[in-house]
Length: 197
Image 1 (cartoon, rainbow, N blue to C red):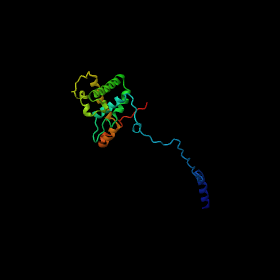
Image 2 (cartoon, rainbow, N blue to C red):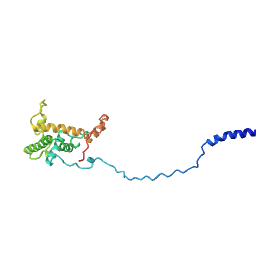
Image 3 (cartoon, one colour):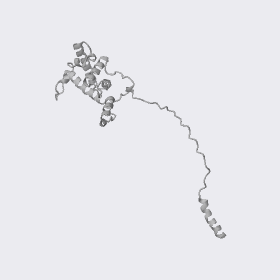
Image 4 (tube, one colour):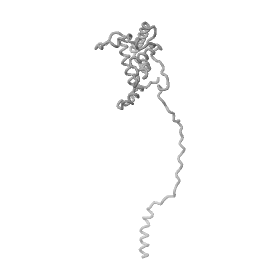
């Protein structure tokens, strides 16, 4: 029996040598302390915390555009209007970046609004009521015609109405209110942000 045990141990020796030898337990190296070189600074959209700068219009023209946006798209109890959506601020930026003929259309149109208001009430358009503005905005109540109007003031009023509606409906204020009421309104991020120069 001893010879069998000896032969068995000789035959199993190469197999035992092939087994890996366990290494002594090593301590894990401590992780280096996390260095935070860049501080975590919270950011916000600029237009929620800063006043916009009037770019294309003078103070009277801007006030007239602001009043026009509040008349054409009034605020409702559950929906913001042109004034709440800051449509005039957006159009001030948009027109400042527009072709010269568009700038001229707006400048002349806003000046005409102020002239008509002063002629009728003695005050600029930005200071009159919606009822006092009704006769001045009469061209907007004319029936639609296939051919565009040749009157520059009517062209301005129609262009301004369309632009104010678009600026209001694509504003962050409008989207956030409407998307709370209707899931499909969704807030797809289609509202405008100011573009820094």
